[in-house]
Length: 113
Image (tube, rainbow, N blue to C red; front, side, top):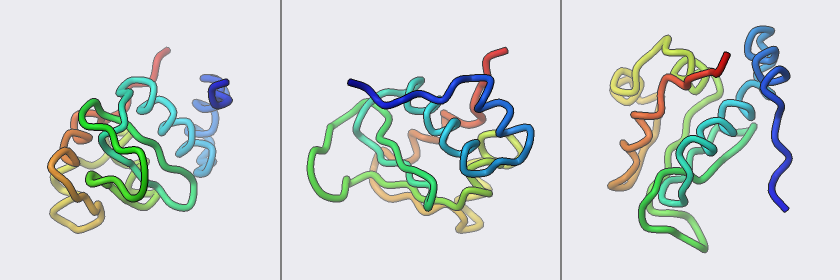
């Protein structure tokens, strides 16, 4: 049985109303659904983490490709208010592993109407 999905109307309302925990979880869900895979772990503590991007799967322990950022930076990237390269340069995104930069193509996140 799969994870419970956040409904689009609930997620979009969370984004619009500044409900950071729900907005982050919803946007992570959209990324996970649009870019399935287990090659990269995308972490937005304390609200969530997903595995995404096709490539070599990892099964146990810390994966070789990890990205971590604050909820504020994540939301900014998802909304297109900042860029992957500027956040990396500023040190607000921590990315390790050969496939970590593959996540750059996932931002901004497209919200369906």
